[in-house]
Image (cartoon, rainbow, N blue to C red; front, top):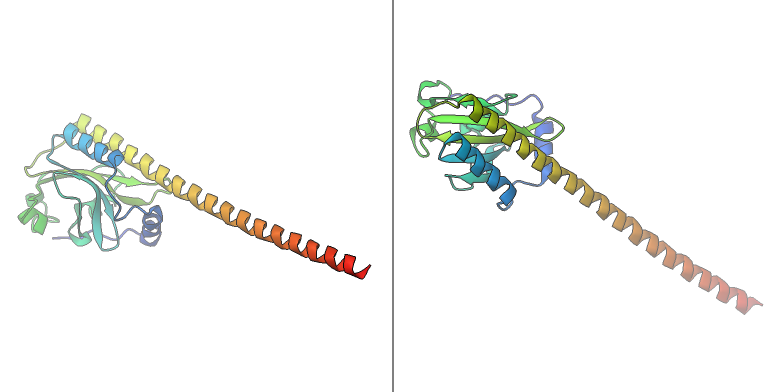
Length: 203
């Protein structure tokens, strides 16, 4: 088994992934629906949105497998994020990188894998939209194109999530500034009141 190389931008990639605040969150229909559609169009029993963390891959959405995680060292997706387009393994038993992988030798008995890298606008690959089968096969051109299109839709949803978090942060900062301004205003009013009282008592 051959573990995937670490991307050269790993520090920045992980920072982007953590900034999304998506790891270990609940299932969300917008991701579940894309996984279901990918698996249906590609004719596979398994589909995933997999995010590659420092030492694990974690499934944001899954069909055909439980939502959970596995070791990054075993992950096909760790290889896929090094690519710019769909990464395909037609027969894992015939590929020296995966032939003795426990996920090939045991459950879920992976034979076929195709993963489209997913990212936000900064270009750092965060994981994949992937489809998996327990028999060897290949995607036809239309299926590959569909996986690419759906992968880009995952990108859009991740980018919107990032923008929402940025907006929430800005709104929180505005709220904090307003609270400080209100406190300062009250302090000024109290100071003016004391000054008026002192002026009256001295006259």
